[in-house]
Amino acid sequence: MMKENASFKRFALAALIGLAGAAAGLLTPMLIPAVALIAFIGVCWGPSYFAIAIAFTLCGVACGNSSGPIPLISMTASVAAAASLLTFGLRKKLPYRYITLGLAALCFAGLYCSIGLGNVLAGKAPYKTLVDNLAAYADTYRKAGTSGAAELIETIGMLSDTIPVVFYGMLIMISEGATLATVLLARQFCKLGGDLRPMARFREWQLPQSLKIGLPVLAGGVIVLLIAKVDFAQPVLYTVLYMLLPIFAAAGLGCLLFVGERRNNGFMKVIAFLMLFIAPFFTSIIGVFDLYSGLRRRMLKIDRLVKEAFERAEKEQRNTVTVDFGDGRGPQIIAVRRKRIEEAFFDSASDPKQFGEYGAKREDRTENDEDTDKYGNAVTGGAGEKPEDDAPTNENDDHENGGGEE
Image (cartoon, rainbow, N blue to C red; front, side, top):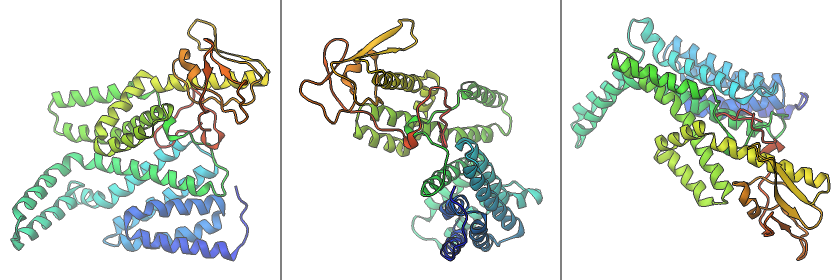
């Protein structure tokens, strides 16, 4: 971490960032970059400058939630706690998944208390204010009598009927998305001067294996509630659905990007992002398939073994590269070099029989100095890109949505 030194320039910048955060407090979505910048100050400049920035920001949050004491206290407390947790987590190099989960819980608590706690204390449903606001909008359009008002009023009525079912799920999904964006932004800012925990590339993020058991348990519980026709069955269904949808969609996107990079197919990457926004449910299905099939995990293991084999051969000055894939066949020859291996960073591999189509990058390759696979074919191609922060890929690492780290 950067040492905290007294500096008028830093003081002024912290105050300016705090003022920007105060303005962001009037518009809730802008709190994402505001909290990320505050965490940057806390990580790279120290607690004194952090206090300056957070004080200004909390003033703006208080002004933006001055409709009552409960929204004011809940939002200011959750923003202060989130900024503190994010700063502490980055400084202590905690796993990003724990930081993200903690922030998501704080974000959900802040949103729920701000929107629904007052209603709950008054003996009403937590979403009563939202339903009343929609009813007021519908009444305004009804009185205006403008063209198309009937269709708009009907749409508002459908939204009012949907809110009781999706209320909790929407709050969870918003919290997950907001906190993941905040963590990633804060990390990008802090890379300028902070000593941070390595983070895996997005294409290598994976879900925890415990979800293999947790997903069917959740699904079974929801099915039992629906069969039993319990009153709260539908809200539980949509809550679980909206909680898991962003997680599996991110995993599915990572899987598609992983395949696209292995094939050097830039068009496939574009399609992957389009699918995330156009068909998130389909992307989520890919994430579920990736979790249960373990396809990407196995391919990452092969990549790691091959890369280690080339590096070992280079270190030992051997011309033959062998890999034991753990399938009972023993060490397999995947490449033969006619001259000494000079550079070998291997990041792309598929079937062991086709390793010959990939090759280590050679800046000084000559016509008579080439690689060949075990069939005698020339090996051509470039090395894969280097992992971010030089973080080695390990099959036992827990790459999770929201910040897989290695």
